[in-house]
Structure formats: structure tokens, C-alpha cells
Length: 345
Ligand code: NCD
Ligand code: ZN
Image (cartoon, rainbow, N blue to C red):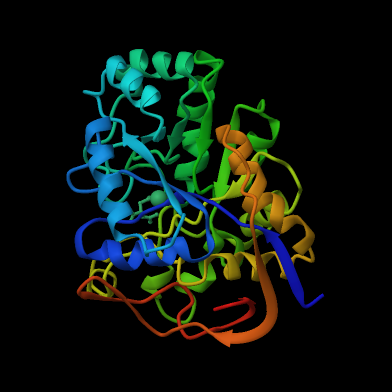
């Protein structure tokens, strides 16, 4: 098989940033995808529907002319979020989820939630309104090893949360472990998970073996190869519980190549191509379309896209560097060769 036509994909987890970066991140996001769930972890975070509306306007202004790509907005959950704000968000028509960052878990998560019990009234309202909770699933307990933080989160926080809010729709974002695959697989259909290209293509050797490679550092951090295999099996299983979410999260080169570098990999220079590589390696290219283009839309209750993109097997080299506003950006897998290319690029 050397061409593959699929329904146009959507990205269910994306960081676009703000200001000068938008012209680059939005252009890349809109190139092959139809829609994206836009993460709210700006500084300051997007905590109200009104702020989400203004951010959405700025994003649409940065969108290339003629593009029909759509940003799907989210709110950043804080301990000050009110149930009324959830009603406003739900009725807006453009807010599609609320993101829960455990305070301190990742980039720009300081304003997140320390005690999940303190947001019970908000979660109840989301459950009632059918607005999904999007979870960064890692504990922040400094005594828990960083490679175990996702599995411990599932036991300590997610399992009790699902029991307590028995109808709340939840996306466990960017899963990285076999424990997460197993938990999502066994849960009822209101729980789904996104999977990034880096967690399908790489494991922690890529990050740490033969030298430390900061451009492969993201959170949750890459795990050992047995976890990578579990994620590949999940993504290619045909189960509607797993769908595409790149977690493309750009940071300028100088914020990555430093003594204490930022977490986040940029993948929208070649997102669908990176996933194609992972699916082909698994011998499962026939499963790519549903993962990339059907299951996320179905979970969010949105229509599937009606047009297509075509990929061709034709090796090409990823760029060494790109721009992020005024900064230089080193994209995921920079300078390496990929097998699949989108026709028309
Ligand atoms: C993200 C970012 O930079 O905004 N970083 C990352 O490593 N994934 C935040 C996040 O999604 O955790
Ligand atoms: Zn993210």
C-alpha cells in the first residue's frame, strides 16, 4: 500500500499558545486537520467563557485565509471556578471541555487544582450538563517517582472520581502507561483517552540513552518500552476509547536547551505523518482513520468530518528547525526521515 486516503482528522489535545506564536501554531494546526481541542494553559489561564471567546477570536484571526479549521475551546479548572460558569460555558456552543491540571503537574499548571474535593459542585454541574472533564492524570506528590505518577493518579484520584461522579464524561489526556490503557479499557464508555505521537513512536531510551535529548521531553514523561507497546496496542485496537490528541506543546529552543528545560514536544509540523509512521510500524494503517478521524468526534458528540486527506509513501526529511513567533523552535524528531507524506504539501 503506498497511498492512504482518510477522512480529515481532528486533534483532541493541542497547545496553540498566544501572541506572536499564533500565526505559526495555527497555520500548522490548520494544514491537515479540521478541528482541535485548544488547551487553556496560557499565562494567565483561560478560566472564563468570556476569556475563551477572546482567545478564540485571536486564534481565528491567525487562521490562514480560506481555511475552515475550527478551534474547540476549553476552560482551565481552578478552585474558584463556579457552577454558573459551567452553565455559561455549556450554553456558549464553543466551549467543549474543562481541563483539570493538578496544581504543579506540568507547564503553567500553578493555577490548577490542589484538592479535587474543593471542585465537587463544578464537577456535578459538568456531569449534569454533559460537559467533559479533560484530565492531566499525574499526581504531584514529590514522594512519588515521576515514572509512576500516572499510575498512582489513576488509583488515588481517577478511580474514586469516577465512582463519585458516575455519569461525568472524562478524557484521560495523553496516556503513557499500560496501567492507563488497562483502566480505560475496563471502564465504561464515558471514559476515553488521547494518545500522542511521541508516546507511540518512542520510549524513554529516546530521551535518555546516549545523551539527554530535551526535545523528546514532555509530560507525562516517556516511559519504558513495555508501556509504549501497550499504547500502540490500544491505539491500533479499533476501540473507540482511544483517539488522536497530539499534545503538541511548543517551547522556544532556549527554553528547552537549558539547565532546567520546559516540558513539551511540538508535533504539528508533521502530526498525521508521525501517527502514520507509528500505525504502519504496527502493521495497522487500516486502523488509523477511526483513531484519527472518527472516535474523538463521536466521544464529543460532534459530526465527523466529510472531506479527506491523502497520504503517500514517499520518504522525506523533517525540518531541523521552525519558527515560533520570534523564537526558534526545534520540532519533534527534527531532521529525521518519515515514510508518509500528505499529498499536496
Ligand atoms: C504542555 C505544555 O507545554 O503546555 N507540556 C507537556 O509536556 N505536555 C502541558 C501539558 O499538557 O502537560
Ligand atoms: Zn497538553
